Amino acid sequence: MRCSFRYASCQKLGVSDRPHCLPGFSYLGLHRYSLTFCVRRRAHVFIDARVVSELLEQISQAAAEHQFEILAYCFMPDHLHLLVEARSSDSDLISFANLVKQRTSFTYRRSHAERLWQKGYFEHIVRNDESTQIVAKYVLENPVRAGLVKEPLDYPFSGSLVFGREQLVDLWHERTS
Image 1: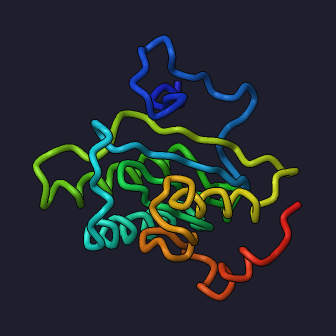
Image 2: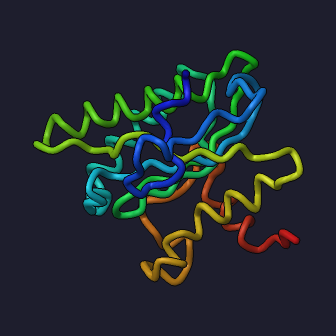
């Protein structure tokens, strides 16, 4: 089964706690997803700008190869949030997520002795009735909720590979109700 490597959350779960694929959903095509990847042993590795920059480059390359856009990203100290949108009917979320983990792991292991990621990842299919803007704000506000910064755009390890800084500033001033 293609989805057997995903876990329902970042907690260590037993084999019986692995989620099943959404019935009738192929994870192919023009969809949006919110993804969370957790660092192994919840180590604080995303506090180094060089590490974040190197891994973001690998994520960007994987996104281009699998025809996804990174609408929002947030490297929290011990996990990563991505809001992605497929750009093709051939876009395959599972292949993309696996490539992200593979490439970022390889890059990280070049300068660190330990493995980067926990097994699996959490994904949420963004429904058609869910606003991309609201989900992006949620992703980018993670550092504020964690007490790391007072304003989302003050956090150095979050942003978008689609929207510029001015567009993100506008995001905070728009109503999302």
